[in-house]
Amino acid sequence: MKKIGIITSGGDCGGLNAVVKGTAYMASTHNIEVFIIPNGYAGLYNLIDIENLVNLSMDRLDRFASNVAGSEAGHSRVKIKKIEDPDKYTRIKNGMKKHGIDGLVISGGDDSGSVMVDLSKNGIQCIHAPKTMDLDLQTYSVGGDSTINRIAQIVQDLKTTGRTHNRVMITEVFGRYAGHTAFRGGIAAEADCILIPEVPVDWDEVYERVKRRYCRRIVNSDVHAGTYTIVVAEGIKNADGSEIVDESAGLDAFGHKKLAGAGKFTAQQISRRMKADPDIKKFMKETGQLVPGIYEAPEVRDVVPGHIVRSGMSSAYDVSFGWEAGAGAVLLLLEGKSGLTVAGIDGQEVQYMKSEDAIKQRYVDIGQIALYESLGISFGRKVVPFKPSFREIKDKIKRIYS
Image 1 (cartoon, rainbow, N blue to C red):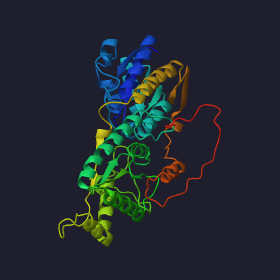
Image 2: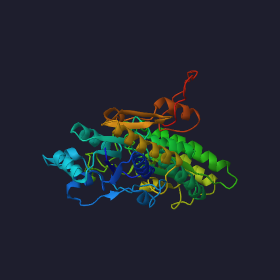
Image 3: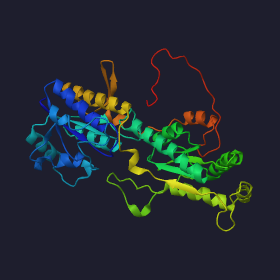
Image 4: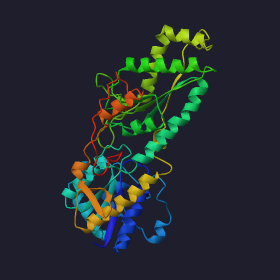
């Protein structure tokens, strides 16, 4: 193996530039050149038409930093299998042959990982460095910790606005199928309520918890000030299991319905109940806030930080894992392996999984939710008692993101 191509695919996030650098530095150690294949799988498909690729020499690596989020290699959302070209795999192989590329390091999430599995089965040697801020792979995935920290900071900061105006503040974040980042980010910010796809939402239960805690805070404040914070994953479901989707927006490149409005929907559910609740009008009068016909119920505001939680700077954890994932991918390619996902490096042991297993969806542990319910956080359902069991750990403790 003389030349390796690196691809980053899917959504951007923290830690990806560390994957790129980890790949390049380990390759350099083994006298292998690394080239950027730009624009994700779109670039791979069009590789045959590209005349020159960027060589990640030591000088070129100095031009970008590992701790900057996003990717120097660029992204696209393209599913190779869906390309209506019967010779697409031959075209890709010819493109690689044109540039002398012997193998690929591909960093992406479950959708991008499924494409990598497809490429491997079609005779293209490639290794997967796991990347998704949603943390829903079986391994840790670069981007998760950075996103959680961004969410926690945003939710915490919004409490100053909420308390100033006595508002209920709702922050909608990513999480189509799994609510890991909403869960962990909400806990870190001491959110009062966290709504995730794993727990269908009982809106009456949500409202009762909002009303009880929110009103208590303001009544007991010497200046009658307080707020209530909710973190909502975009993929939450109603109690009947229905999703909140934008039916007019069509499907994305991987065939998923485009989600829209979970935060706004949550705000509407709470606001509607507040306006119809006679206790709220009484509360507003007792705390000196009631202005008949103008201000009769607290404001409920939703905020959607969107791609801000993907952007900016990477966490130290993601940079470290990114370097290891990139380096491990090169070492697996040197062993002649393909279709595998780097799980991490433990000491001098490169750990990996079959990619088709690694990209299977992983959800928030419902049992762990009960722990946080016992600590006072609402998850939009009636509280389930936490019933602990006890076990002595004689080996390594489970990592928080495992």
